[in-house]
Amino acid sequence: MARTQAQRKSETRARLIDAAADLFARKGFHAVSAESVAAAADRTTGALYSHFGGKEGLLLALLDVWRERTAEQLADELSRAPDPGTHFAAMWRSVTRPAADRGDAWLLLELELWLYGVRDPLVGAQLSQRYAEVRALLGEGLADWAAATGSELPYPPDETGGLVLGVLLGCAMQYRLDPRCMPQQLVVDGLSGLLGLTRETQPGGAS
Amino acid sequence: MARTQAQRKSETRARLIDAAADLFARKGFHAVSAESVAAAADRTTGALYSHFGGKEGLLLALLDVWRERTAEQLADELSRAPDPGTHFAAMWRSVTRPAADRGDAWLLLELELWLYGVRDPLVGAQLSQRYAEVRALLGEGLADWAAATGSELPYPPDETGGLVLGVLLGCAMQYRLDPRCMPQQLVVDGLSGLLGLTRETQPGGAS
DNA sequence: GTCTATATTTCGATAGAC
DNA sequence: GTCTATCGAAATATAGAC
Image 1: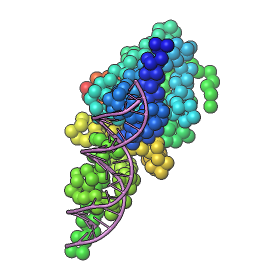
Image 2: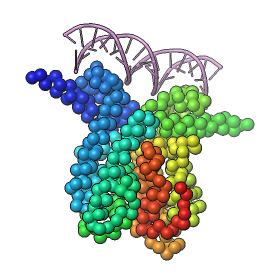
Image 3: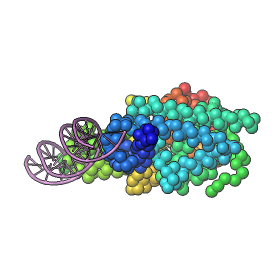
Image 4: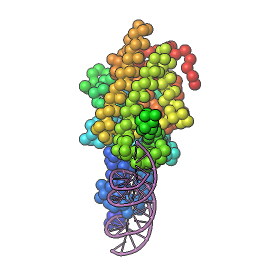
């Protein structure tokens, strides 16, 4: 029973952060009022200010959570994929997931945070770390796979991760504006070509 | 003398659009007031509303100009580069140009417009066309070069252009957060690898 | 066509009750 | 810790003079 208060507190935090992630992605940080975030979380602005000190504090907290989730999900996906081809296809699917599942909002929030980070040094530094983590995870995963098959990556792990991340981001942006211009097979083939792999590695992906 | 009015009118349009491009890139569309745009253009909100009907109308007009400039600049660069390696290096330089020259603002405005377009169907449709144009131009340029050297692109021109554009966008985003993580050579090599070219095509690029 | 002045709305942030 | 009520600031958009 003594936990009831702490529970409510952390639930409020979580609700506010989730609502912020959703609204910031759908409408943009500056287009969303602190009150609408609070309302979407079934709380009031008073609670928001008490917990985060304002809309910007809420964004900072969101960035933290976002960063942890990204690392977890990526590590999870990496551990499941048997080879880069399947891996790439899985990542591409998770990027292009339709709006229903919110995988769509991922990219929007990603760019929203990027824009914010480029303009705000504090957020920028944290974002930069997050990207470095992703590159490292991606690079390590690919290096491990390369070592296991006796092949070799054409670039150091971190740089390889950077190129792969770059392709995924840039292609996802184009896909979001016009899905027809960016078929999955093209992205997977492109990534494979980037790494110096021939296309024989994936037997027959999806459409 | 009869042209004075028309001149002033079109100059006001141009000034407002330029100011909008600069401010939207540096601070973001929603973070910029219509009044501050007018002030930066040495005009008032009255003139802005008279010409464009509001901040959103100004964005639409900006998008038009932006689209034309992109096509012109790209076609220009393509016609000058003797081979893909030099071409990629030149494009990368123009993307990573430091903040002084405003080449920096290019990427910010690009993402700002993308986010706006993803949320607004009208802007989205126009943006989609612009990206398709860029892909086509890039793809044609590369296809021409391939034909001239007897080699062959691994994908259709448009799709090749899409991959190249994707790499440039995604890598530029990472570069903007941390320049050290994305050396020019890596991007150029990556693009060459993507197209199935070996690295022997560029003799010795810059740092 | 452009400016000045202003009406209207909305947002961010705070004070105080519970 | 959360809510209600509200103050002050800022933004959009318009009206009318020149």
